[in-house]
Length: 186
Length: 186
DNA sequence: CCCAGCCGTTCCGTTTACGGAACGGCAACG
DNA sequence: CGTTGCCGTTCCGTAAACGGAACGGCTGGG
Image 1: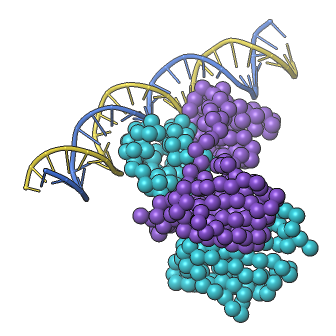
Image 2: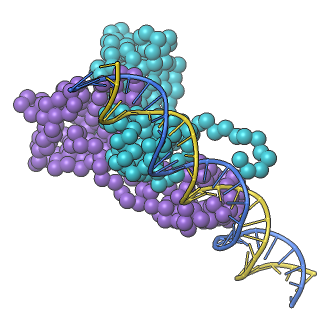
Image 3: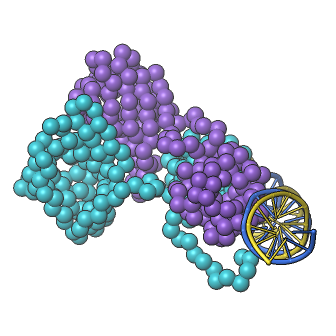
């Protein structure tokens, strides 16, 4: 590095490690080999390999060639949902992905993370609010406080949240899930 | 359509000229000089100058340093404001909100819009892929082509998408919904 | 068993993005 | 006028991102 400045680490926001992991995940999800993706994207295997392992700081052109071939926007491999509002609770972290309103109701779509070994009780919402949860990973126990249900990866739960309700991760794995809140128009 | 990944993209995403113009616009909008921004962002004036004039292919690190100093997410200079990756089909528009991978499977969360008066048939996915749809508004008829189900606002449908499947909006109202695709790890 | 083919990583020479410094242009001031 | 100060651009040596090729590992076939 130029100048006699102490090496500054920037592990957080746009670190090459996270970008590399996302690219590798997208590639493997499509069942494509590194060699093939490198060839079809028009970049060197050395480049793609180093990039996926976070050993390089790619140029925009390289990143674009790869994400274009993967069929995702460039932003998809950069740091996650940027500057989105997040709610933190005892056991649950919720990130708002999108909100939506139509004539009958308004909706809020959240990304949920539930930490293991803790439970979170939420007070009742206004009457008529429903919650829909789809579990990505882990085992989730959630629902009305007096009658929660359990769902594993791929499962779906829904309930009317006009009574107090709970969230808990069973086992010692963090639960990832999506949550859709539906607020009927009053 | 859910079979086809987003393949279209706006060409401006990685156009160094457009990126440079957006950075220059953001900088001037804040009334800060090129020299000052370069110093506070910790990049060379030569770099910033060349970048703004579209003469270089910046690295991720450089872009991040500059956008962080400008106080905007990196994605803000890659494409126009509020652009999201979108797949268009005959009847369905899908916007990727988030993708997620864990040890067992990977997930893609989409925002769906289904136009009334049309129907869309999607080919089978690889074996084991499941789709979860939660309807925001309108009435959706969707599922395996030989046995689709119907859901109204607040309802939820899910099916295994290793056979051809259909999407259609019943009535004359557009359907808004969320779609979660789950790809088991092979 | 060997060999062919593909995998992802490593090696290495070339290209190029990088920042410090030098430059010309412009405005303010004595 | 010269001088000073900041502007954005250009020059240039260095560090590093790049792709081609070579490499070792694994798998399937003869």
